[in-house]
Length: 91
Image (cartoon, rainbow, N blue to C red; front, side):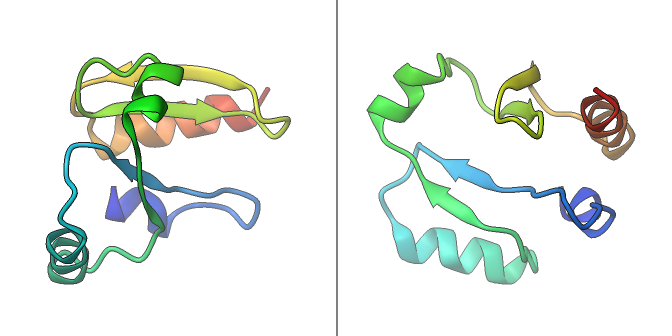
């Protein structure tokens, strides 16, 4: 995801939601070790339920109006994520 984050346009945002850990220090270490510069939010059980997350990772591609354009479950390649972002921004 770090490579995808570097190629975002001025009106695009990448953020991660971590919902399977309560160890904030471990999340900070992971982000630092992997040089992640995008926001990482701590999710809750309510967040998982609201977005119907049942597997990790779940990726959402959101239009400019805030609606979900597409979602994927499972690991994705940089090319796959970039293509989905392009298709989302083209809408």
